[in-house]
Amino acid sequence: MKRQALLKRLRRHGCYLKREGRSHSLWVNPETGRMEAVPRHAEIADRLAAKICRALSVPLEK
Image (tube, rainbow, N blue to C red; front, top):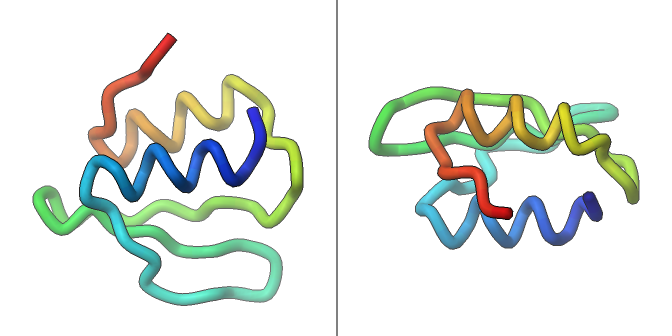
């Protein structure tokens, strides 16, 4: 999955960027208070994208 597509999905479901790290961006879901790191690679493996979405309580889209 492209990183930009994942970030668009996170934003659509209310998540926001908390801060930029060295090699990851930290995203937060304000409804749950959960925080998850998103790597800064152009392509993110589908399993990792699914894990990030699950951790932030974002529904998985097909």
